[in-house]
Length: 143
Image 1 (tube, helix red, strand yellow):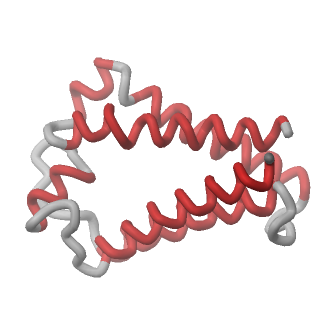
Image 2 (tube, rainbow, N blue to C red):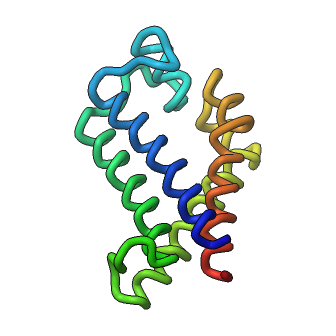
C-alpha cells in the first residue's frame, strides 16, 4: 500500500509540476489569455500577470522534488537525503500541504487574498488536493 500511495503522490505532483513548467513557457490552459490564467491559478487581488518564468520554474522543480521525496520514503528511489532529513522532509511537506489546504477554508485568510475565479477553484480543487497530499505524506510516515 505504501508503494502505491507514494506512486500516486509522485504522479500527482509530477502533473502539477508539469503544469507549472507549461505556464512558465507561456502555456495558457486553463485560461484563454494571461489575465484569465493569472486569475485562475494565482488569484491575488489586483494581479494581472503570471509570476516570472524563473520563479514559476523554481516552483515546478520544488513540486517535483516533493514527489521524489515520496518515492524515496518507500525506497522506490535511493534516499535523496540522510534518514533523519528524509523524515523531516516528509513531515515538513505534510505540514506545508495541510496548512495550505486549511488556509483556503479559513475565511479571514482567503477573504483578504483571493479573488474569483481562483477563490472558488481553490476551495473546490486546489485546497482539497493539498489536504489529500498532506494526508498522504502523513500516511507514508505511519506505514
